[in-house]
Length: 427
Image (cartoon, rainbow, N blue to C red; front, side, top):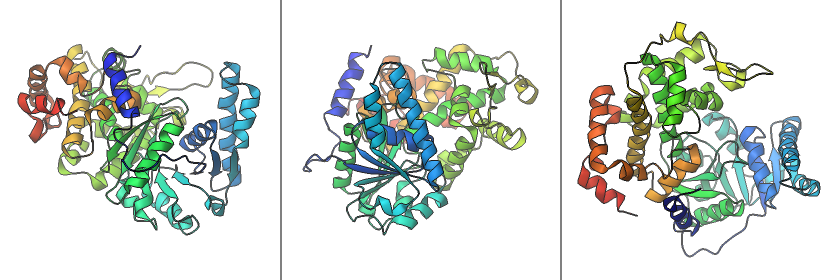
């Protein structure tokens, strides 16, 4: 059951307060999706599920077809759960055409690139087909970390370029983060806002920046979990306390699901465009854990069936029993409440920086983005400050900064009770 605060915030977003005014409502009729992997086939599914024709493209037709098989499996599960009828599945599948031919994107209203998180790979793709598409087509990337302004340079029409960041699994996650660059036109923003509502998702609009909003803030949860592991906290207690803090799963489970290699890549991309404060925070205890897991132990998460957990074929996952050999776990001297505060405050403070730096546009979008993007406890990341008490929040932040590092410092313009109080009244 959603609280009244959350319901009101969703209503405000759905009312279109962030959609540019003066542009008629539009409907996307045909979308091209480049990359048939985890994100690409999910985007294709939610588009076709809502009556949109889809061109699902990969480097070979076999790979694109494999994406279609994944879609078919999800739809079969929906039939088994009596969520759809068999004839509906056939209608949905008929709307998806798989191919390796870029020329078939020529009639698409919207093209979403959803390949591996690598700037060169993405830029090469955009260079390959940018002359084939119509001039008014919207070109977008599902990137979770590469600045949109960088990718827009590879487009013939940067005013039509935008970031559309879906969350996994796409068919279950309600949030879509729309990332705009300086060149992105208001008309493009309005059209993409309409597309997100057309596929029955919740859009939040943020400005370009390293890691945007959701990735940048959410990564603090897993970073703090790894830092606690490095300091000697047992992985089991970290996971349990993460859930006690109000998250659906613990931080080590999350990073395994994302993939440690993906986190490694996100870190590499963010380092290319981050400011000094963010750069300093990348070089810490969590950084050492990630390097060891990837480079020394070859543990990439669920993708290769070994991360912080092991993933046997026909039984439940279990924590890697050798963790304590490599990260000397001991009875933690940190109280449970202190661990909870570190997990929560590290994210809240990063979100405050996002607002100060102009990445976030509204408190409403920050709150809803945190709940529906990565499961931050309701009623949301900034509303937490009100519930905690502004004076107590400032005092606790100062304690955490003194005890654990400057990444718990509040932003210069939001570092006292009166400034934070005024900020929280903005919306």
